[in-house]
Structures are given as structure tokens and as C-alpha cells.
Image 1 (cartoon, rainbow, N blue to C red):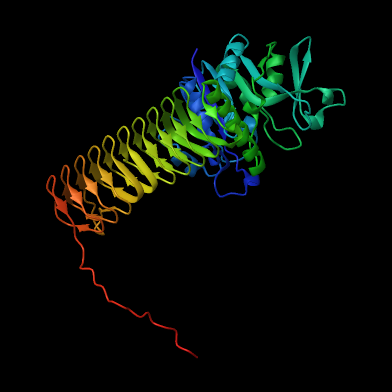
Image 2 (cartoon, rainbow, N blue to C red; image 1 turned 120 degrees about the horizontal axis):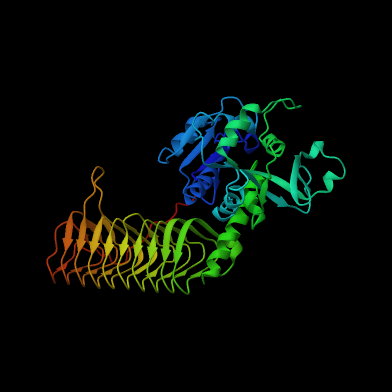
Length: 454
């Protein structure tokens, strides 16, 4: 039986007070809707149908790389009306999961349970049991079987004591959706078409409505304002932190860690407080990340130690390297094993060979540095002439003195030495010494200027 996923994503999100459509608001570094789409793909859904409305062009543009069928809900006439809009593109056979674009944390495991429970009945939903169910639609059961969904405002005192609620996540046979959705009416105080009415239709047809509960309650929490978004962010981050710790990661304080992407880890990884991991990252065995670091789309090999407040973006780092504090690896930085990158060193689009060091206040851009070379404090590769970028090549076992400027394109040979304070504009051959300085002038018994008396 083929599976389709229908995602309701037409809401304006007025309470967000934002120019950004609600489903594009970020959770863990990704749009809310992006989480739901990723979940649909993990379930191998043959069709992902997304209903758009407010900010639809912006939403579609953001996900133009995804295989999505877009359906417009021009008027906001309720959830039932939204799903009605999908009928022209919804297959006649198979089964559909109906999800919300602002409920981002529902897991594939919970949805798979719902699919399995619903295949025999043709309809099922996710419910949740709360300590306080005020404001939610109640699940009315008789002999354990669902008999109705009653909205809080319509519930009597006995029904309001029910703690099991409807989460708005459904699984329904496509054939039944084609049968039931055209029968929806808006004969209610709000004048809207409610998707919950299909439950009554299923019961009228003699069907049993299946149900499952999520393993974690935050899976079914929706987002309507900034307060809810922040609360869900922390719950989701705590969940991710727990998963990493179960894999053996030593998080110094799980409440002060953020994963905004995917992280692959080896054994005995240690991450200090206030670290942010973004995109796709990998940390090898025994990697240590100091406090306040930001690691984005980066691979760090075993045994590397990163000191606090370092920033990596699209970098590749070898084994047993020492980096930071306050280092910055920009896109294209490739560090071999046993490299040392110290405080306030910036590396961009450069490769640094085995055992080489740049320990202080250095900029290395568009450079190739060989093995066991030493780059002194204050060295910069002058790679940009205002219009074009040029490369600096430094050989093995070279020594670059402090406060040197290497004006690219330039090559420093194997074993070559550059004297401190030099501006190097021509190639330096292997094992040669090059230095460039103006003559030092000394004035004996020099008298400093004095302030004039008023």
C-alpha cells in the first residue's frame, strides 16, 4: 500500500509577529516545515503534498529542491477545507498521513506505529494524555474504542474530565478521503470545515478508529508564537543531547548545547558548554571541543583538541591537531595531522601539512603549506589585490618570521627562512634566507616633544 503525506502549511502565524511565514520559522537551525518534510522522506512517502497559503511563494522557493506537490489554499476555511484542496492530486488508492507544518518534532517511529495501526481500519489518529487537557478536543471512548472527538467548548462537565486529547495528526485511507471530504459542511459557529468531522463519518460507516500515543509528548506540540517556539527548541535540544550521551558523548552540561543539524561521533568525545554544532559534522574518537565553539559542516579526526571560542565552517581537520582558542577555520581549510593553529589565527581555503604550526595572530588565505613548517606571529598571506585572489605556496620545514607579509602569488621553498618583519614579493628558493627591512635609524639623546604651557 503506497503512502502519501499531506502537510498543512497554509497558516499565517499572526502571533509570531514576523514577516517570515510561520512554517519557515527556525527550529534547531531548520524551518519548521523542513523537519516535517524530512520525516516524510524517512518514511519513504511516494507523494508529499504540501498545502500553502500565506507567503506561499516564499515557502515554495525555500523548498524548491524537494520533490513536493504544492496545493494552494487561497482562503483559510479550516483544516477540512485545506485537505479538500488536495483531492485533485491525491491518489485514489493507498493511505495518507495528515501532518501539520507547525508540528515539527513528530518522529518517524510514532508515524510508523500510526500507519501500522491504521492499515486495517482505514483511519487512525495520534492522541495524547495530559495532566491538564483544558482547551483541547477530548477523545471520548466506550469500552476502549473511540466514539467521538468533542471540542472543549462543546464538552459537558463529564467530558471535560477526560485527559486524552486529539493531536490533529491523522492516517486515513485515500479512498475514504475521496469519499468523506466532499461531504464536509461548515455548519458551525466559526463557519469552517473541520477535519475532525471525518472521525464521525468513519464511525457512522461502522469503522473502528485506531489510535496511538507518541513516546514523547513534545513530538505533537505545535508552534504558534515565539514563546512556544523557544520552549520547543529547548525540549528538542534536550532530546538530541540525550541521544548523543547514549552514544557515549560526554556533554558537560546538556542544557547548554545546541545541535542544529546532524552529528556523527566516535568514542570518548567531550563537548564543553555553549557549543553549537550546525549542518553535517563529524567528530572522531577522543575529540574535545572547548566552551563556546561553533562547528559547522566540518569533519574533525581523532584526538584533536579544540580550545574555547573557535569557529569552524566547512573545514577538514586531521588527527591530533591543536586548535585555538579564538581560532577561525573558514571554508576550504584543510589541516593534516598534528597541526597547531593557535589563538586568533584565521585559515581560509588553505591546506596545512603534517606537523606545521601557526600559533599566533596569523592569516593564511589561499595557501598551501607543507610539512613541519613554522609560521610566526603576525604573518599574513596577501592573497587579494582588490580584484583577484592569488596563491601562496610554502614548502616543507620552512620558517616564516614574525610580522611577515607574503604577497601572492609567491613561493617559499623547502627549508627556506623568511626574516621577521619582511614583505616578500618574490619567490624564495629552497634553503635560502630572505628578509626585507628598511634601515634602522638611531638618534642619540633624543628629546621627546613637550606639551606647550598655557
